[in-house]
Amino acid sequence: MRLAHYSLKAVLKRWKNSRKNKQFGRPHPIQMADIAHNNSKGDSYFKGKSFLLLTHELSYTGAPLLLMETAQMLIEEGATVKLVNPYRGRKRWSLRRNRLAVAREHSVPLVPFSSILRHLATSDFIIANTVTETVMTIVDEIIQQAPETTAKLIIWVHEIDVERYLPYTANIKCAALTVFDSQACKDAWENCIGSVQNSVVIHPSISPRMLVKLSQCRAEFPHVPTSRNPTNTHPASREEIRSVLGVDDSDFLVLCLGTVEDRKGQALLLDTLSQFSSHCDRPIKLCLVGFKNARKRKQFIKNMSDSERKVLSSERAYVWQSEIAAFYLGADAFVMNSQGENKGRGECFGRVTLEAMAAGRIVLGTSVGGTKEIIKHENSGYLFPPGVEGQTILTDQIKYLTKNPEVAAALGSAARKYALEVFDQSRFLKEFEVSFSKILQNHRNLG
Image (cartoon, rainbow, N blue to C red; front, side):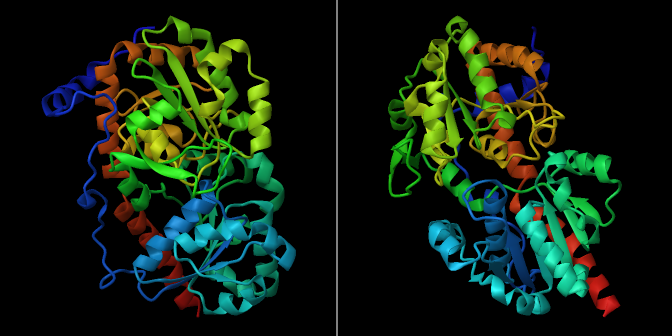
């Protein structure tokens, strides 16, 4: 396969002219001005507004983490934000109390589920985060007990595999606003349930916290692959990270970060890399971050073939971590190989792809779902079709990048610039403001 790269001419020229350090993969300095937004508490639309948040769980992954980061943004804008504790009952709270740390870290106060009706009455907006059974059951209860609250209810949809969640979404059209993470997600839902009135697509932004971490030459690195304990980290440089991961300068390290499961395509990616690794200009190594627990990690490693073990060793197979910036720092490329469940819809959005771009890494992803709304093919990364046939194209793309490291670096630089310009916090908050202001105005008119 011949990869056209004429569209890279301009970025290659800029990269060669501006490069001050020949070390491949050196992090780009991200100035605080890059992540600053124009709003301030003095003129922010959100100042004085009150939000009540509902979520199915608290974790450092996906939708729960996005909700906490959004809550922190709103608090910094002067809003009052409260999160309903998702763990009902003393026993469940005791088992999950360590997960409440993510709310504390983002300064989001929790309120008990028993007080939900009181907080519903005093909130300007109610955000139901995800259409999981847990959240939508709460939404159903709210509509039954206080039907007037639908006038300020926002359902935030992060799920693209519609069929899995259809049984719980009878009231999805009752909300004052439905927010989808991507146009692909909105299309998938409307193809199944018909047009969703009062809906909008808002692409998530990159967390300002993550941008600051990605600006550093050293990052907190989890050195125990089987532990999620945040105390098991230490600041490390790119060279130190790669050394611990068993990777040297001659290796091309591919990072795949996300919950390890069939629909995310990690096993398919490992099989693909193992088939051509030894035939590349540089040896290919894989780092997987996102096993749900140590038991699933152990089983995955046990089932690997000999050729796969040459690509993925146990020292590069991590359970999900709260500190992930170091993995971007140590990698040469990032692959989003999400396939979806049955319909080949891919990833709903995928903020890890954005974070890899902000770190200046070359990104490669399936040409479906939200990924194709993030990556501009041959300008800020490469796209390839889902399924087994797409893996052949991915193989050619990686081979090309190992032969042409200057192209990988130039595309990484272009990806960073694009991510910071298009997916910044100010754009995200402005789109929230426009959509939420309509809800509040309609609510006041009805009142």
